[in-house]
Length: 114
Length: 111
Image 1: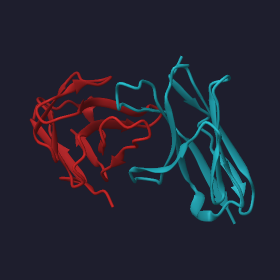
Image 2: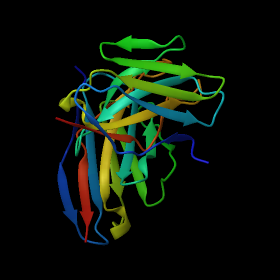
Image 3: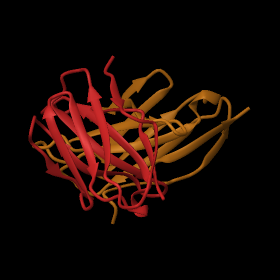
């Protein structure tokens, strides 16, 4: 089974702090994704990466950056956390380039910014 | 207009009932289609892919209507354990592995 793990299930940070969310997958997937999920808005793509050191902006990249130094690890960085970044953050991975390739999700990190 | 639209529900049905969800998508060039299931406070998990000819997996049947740009999910003989949010998911372009998620339809099965 594919396993996607995230560094924390719950996180509380203060406004202005730099926040790192880590994601690791063990299935040698090329693609990795970061989403946030908010009530009524569904899953929104922040950034994704299809290879080491490659990244592409998703629909809501403002206020976030990412890092992919190794194939299995994809980090989401909040440079200066703000209260509107309080959300559930979900990481996912998938195989590259197959039409029926579905995404496998980690358990999520519920981030609260106070 | 949203790229993928679903009725948010909730759909409240008794055990044993048959329930159907529909989903519409805006991009006629969309390539692949999926249904995901998300339990409360858990991550989404793939329920089934949706094939052009329609497909069945046990009590679950998925249909695709490209002409009308909608996807459906039918659940027969509902179980209490089917209570969850069902997400309609579309892959729009052949050159990207990005997926577009609907906001989900909540199902509550009661005894």
